[in-house]
Length: 331
Image 1 (tube, rainbow, N blue to C red):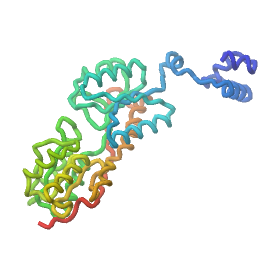
Image 2 (cartoon, rainbow, N blue to C red; image 1 turned 180 degrees about the vertical axis):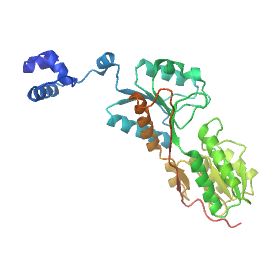
Image 3 (cartoon, one colour; image 1 turned 45 degrees about the horizontal axis):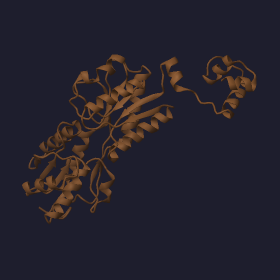
Image 4 (cartoon, helix red, strand yellow; image 1 turned 90 degrees about the vertical axis):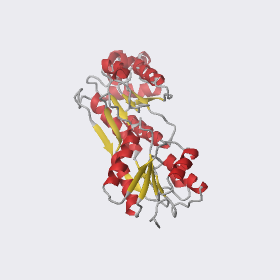
């Protein structure tokens, strides 16, 4: 600012007001200051401004980025924050739990104005987030809803999505349908299982079988075991697309053709579903929209548009995508 003052011959106070958009300054002077600032390469020091105002213009994001679903959530978060002139600080914890808490503390040390987090597990106790509560930092969780902690929450409507998938198989005439469930410590897997069971219960004559094994990743061995134990089924609703891909490959290993002998539908609309042959039917969760909605909900907290003790939940729509892996049954 001293360099700008020397360049155009006005006081540092005037320059400060222009650069921080405070006070009434004549348009001609304002333009001179801004032109000089640009030519001299001026950049605002957000650390100094943050100490003055308490606003660091940063948001902590703790979301894994190991698959397409989460990278799309991050994309939605990133693009929405950039539009608001905020900077995301992305951290990716491992699966120890302790690391996730350490990452939270690191974000607090960075004085972020809010945190968007996809918790590793659902059963995190309230004291796990105690420092966040004590400091009054706005938080939004995505994908996993915490039963012991009251945070604002954004996710896909997994219950509706699983109902759509199950109804699709029933509409094709399948009477023996199985659900390859995901890990029940995760709320999305639990909700999809319930959606499957409730939908089957609405249709007399339809038998629904839930797997003993839990599968949220590609595991050919578990998928083979699952199919060998359930030779009666004609259709499978897998908890996600990775598990569905494993079922398709396991079926081929057992001499079953997809969809002639076995219909398979997944969940999540991951790119691999389109690459498989035949392409896998699925449910689209619109993860980018989840990210955008999480930012909107977080800023409602930051701007005081939500009461501190109030908790809001946003469930984005789920959409059935029918491809070649599902067809009418011949049995």
